[in-house]
Image 1 (tube, rainbow, N blue to C red):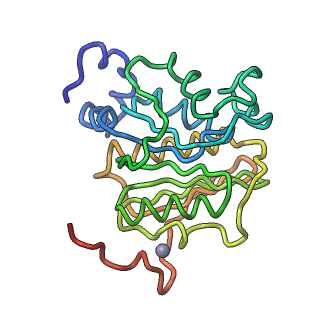
Image 2: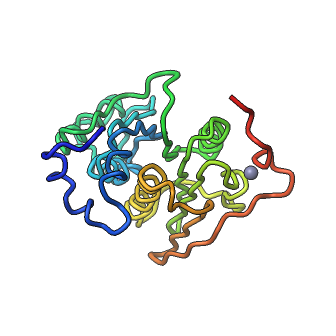
Length: 230
Ligand SMILES: [Zn+2]
């Protein structure tokens, strides 16, 4: 799917980033990305993914907009109480004519998943489903000092191996938009430039400072198994 002239114009700045280019933009344009959790925490990531030119965003969130979601800038006060996926879709639609934003269709198979789930159990379940399907995924882990972003390309140590032992959790703190934006950048790399993505990694954001380290497989974890064929 070649880029049309208007799309080249839309993403002209991104296209001149060294190592990015048209092939990367075309991969983004062709990608279906499932986002698990579309609340105030993931708001910045949703905006970044739309503006980067992901072709189709599937919002997987059955909840209603709550007062805390207003911390993300996506949800206007009047949306509190309404369907969260629908409210996010309404807010994102005007940002790009080239991106479709829909509720996650049951059984839909994405090309990548962003996990921004409201509980540790939901994050584990969503990450494990993506790992089993060999779908690249990024997990956002919020805690009181900031949090972490875990990038899991296919075959890398899984989220269970790389998650915080202390058990990160909500409520979101200052810096959550920065954390979500980092997650969106990681996801764009997994989708657009898979050839330059290395092993899995964990980016910590603690009181505004970032540090990056490769993830390590825990002994005996199921993610060491060779994937089933076919
Ligand atoms: Zn593992």
